[in-house]
Length: 345
Image (tube, rainbow, N blue to C red; front, top):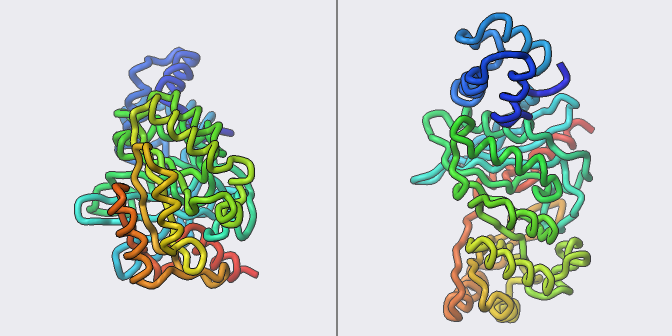
């Protein structure tokens, strides 16, 4: 028993059953037990022959993670601190809105990219998550969402999804599969700090997923400071890759832009941002930064925020605003894990 069964796609499970000389239709039954009924023990699969259940138990595990702590905000946002088999912890977030429930999930334990506005990397990078660990986050979110139906998935939790490309893409295919978790590709968003080779690979996948890029600055000097990854993948190359991505996929790109007081939130930065996105089918998602004591960051005042937004809109840029959620439960990436680890010291 060295592999979680959630590592397998439906076709891979069929191949395993063929190797065991079992009927292939059993694969869909097993998937249904795992993803529709969310069972925790192979013995619960009461329409699967006992001999096959024993074979499954001998060769596979069913569970990788367990809940460590669940916090619910006054605005309805819930944050799950989840413990892995090796005792590392990751975070997932449930974000309810009027017509949708979004699950925000992690792709790595910690992060190696050290963005200055994010708490995920403050404790360093440990490892990639497996496909099973990614999928189990979604299953826990569905469980804790209760009567609210999970409609959207965003890879905006801990870690860089395109740095764990193979596990993330395999998880997405299972999440999207009709036999799996049945969440439409257009309701799944991959958020990246700008890993150019990963964006190029994604453009060839034939998946209708949403691509969100953490931009957060409109010049290399500021972005180098905020996001060291920019030194390897600078803005000019990143934006050229975005143009190529749109040509291949015909999919609009979202640029995330966290507004940080005294750093990137004045009118001069709005002018630069408006200039560099001209001619690209994109939208800018403006985000007032979370106050994070450890990072000494705070959002701009309301007037500066509105001036920044209004300039973009007047210059024909498609703008949305993401309101901070769950601030009273440390819902920004990595914050709950950081607080938990501090308690252990």
